[in-house]
Amino acid sequence: MTVSTANKVVLGLQWGDEGKGKVIDMLAGSTDYVVRCQGGANAGHTVVCNGKKTVLHLLPSGALHKEALCIIGNGVVVDPVALSEELASLEGSDVNLEARLRVSDRAHMVLPYHKLLDAANEAKRGDKKVGTTLRGIGPCYGHKMSRQGLRCGQILLDNFEDLLRSQLVATNKHLKELGEDGFDIDEMHAQVLPYCEALRPYVTDTVALLHEAVKEDKCMLFEGAQGVMLDIDFGTYPYVTSSNTGVGGVVTGSGLNHKNVGEIIGIVKAYTTRVGEGPFPTELDDAGAEELRQRGGEFGATTGRPRRTGWLDLVVVAYACRLNGMDSIALTKLDVLSTGDDLPVCVAYELDGQRLDTVPASLEDLARVKPVYETLPGWSEDISSCRSYDDLPKAAQDYVRFVEAQTGVRVGYIGVGPDREETIVCPS
Image (tube, rainbow, N blue to C red):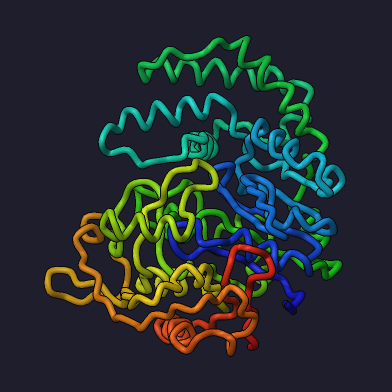
């Protein structure tokens, strides 16, 4: 399996869970730096190598390659407790990150009180809840935007304990205003402080570090979290995450500029899934959804929640490609469709008798659209041993070509199984 060594960005082009972790892990073997740019511990990237499954939440998926320097950029919200636990989970393996991990001094910290705020906010929404992971991500980004947050670099200050206590007092007051019980300030201060101190050795000016790497012509892999349809601006708002999940988030979340990012690769699952609330035009009914869910193992890597499942929606994929200037697509989990059944693919929407070829901004309109399907022939052959495009059955080849024709973007990688090696790299 041969991949180029130029800088690359990997983004999910649906509602997340497209299989980014596997593709990132595959590409990271030929890179010097792997960089997370947005999101937090609400991400779950699953990597399978030689049958062993590893789930990463904050650490870049490329961390499993021993040579790459791992960067958690300024656009990420960092949970010191979760990061400490994740590092501990890798102890005893051959992955040693002590010398390879850098955390941006500009990244904001997710602390336990953010999770309490997250739960309180969801409870207030009642039947209009967003369906967050309750990891405190939204409240942390809220504190960042309202200029109330704590950044990782502040851990290095002599008065950090006072800054932390001030935040605890203010947030406790806010929770009580929301009708919650609040928390014991001294107890939480004592709980949080050791984890913040443990983070201290990794805190670095990653912006300066990455710009120096550009000067030295180092190879970088930028890892997206979640997917474009969960972008705070371009996704199915308000049923979205709290960060920019597209290429814009890579630029603002790393401190580099658009000239540095290199090739942009979009990850597309061969069907569609989403977690949480919100419209989903190609969602299957209960029986069909469960069958696809079981075949694809569609349960959240972070929460374990069953994912909603449906047919491939190429309106969504083409929209995400336009937004992000995709150079190529990695089509994942094609093997899950090896049932022999015909495969409906959504190519447009119909709304009040009018054809739509893009995703409407109005949530109410998106909830009312009817998918326009084209049905492609299926295949029944096991494709997990295929290692070239020509090895695939003709119907599977046609499915790949249909994706290319509808999006105008070349399919460069095809996933035919969960393991790192179960990937076809298509020639340019």
